[in-house]
Length: 343
Ligand code: PEP
Ligand code: MN
Image (tube, rainbow, N blue to C red; front, top):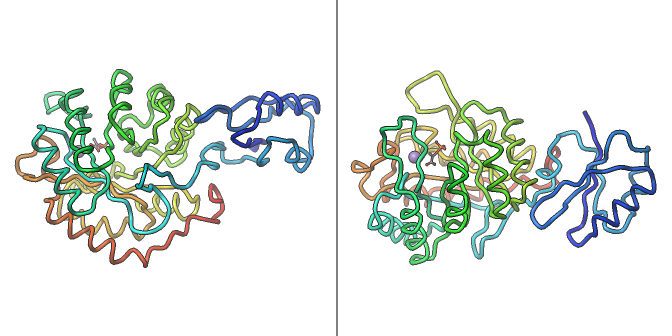
């Protein structure tokens, strides 16, 4: 089904634009994003209008015949800057690395120090851990957020960490630079709305059985609630072969990036579930169009309280980073100018 969506300039006065439209018999409902109303969706019972005439109304940036159902995603910026750190765009993928869970302050500090030394810019680590078995280690909660923030600050890193439920949204938003939505929560639209309202950029993992349409729908919910930027993250979907933990769908990565022009990361750790596959999958992800890699690493993988088998020793991570940088010129940014969500 197609609909018309009117995209506004940031400094537009939505009430005035709506008044102009109403005078022409065009009824709209506002679509909010970070900073207020970003667009107006034209109701189907409105009078017919010439798109060029609507585009001439002061405050209107663009009039789109919307067929995707994701107007905000379609108009989302393709990259996002966190200070010096750029997410999205071309060049070698941004590496976000760290332990699966923040186990102790010492572990987090050591990881941050060694990661910063090898040029990593974003620290990952879980304070709240979504585990399949309730008897497994569940994370240290709020105090682990503090360990992560302290370590990131001490070593000049940005921090990405996961919120799992509405109670942890505020503390996570306070501590983190990027909020992670885990695979198990991709469908939780109430949580997505809460996270969107914080105004923080979000890494949105794909649910294990989610279609790309459902994944994009979740991103649209985040943007509608106020998130300024959504980085998709393919972390493997449910497969039928137990030799790898999940099935890494690189087709989704190529589709999102190279067809729709959307920013997408790959998490080879949860996809493979085994550390020996992380280097080749990281290179494959970069070739498919990943603009970021989310990699689990640990100073002593054998001692990890969660996901030890997939934790890449820090020395091996540094080799992966060198290889990716060397090959980066082979993987240009082809997101611009593509059709679909591309611009
Ligand atoms: C994680 O990144 O720590 C995690 C739990 O991942 P996923 O949601 O992909 O299982
Ligand atoms: Mn993990």
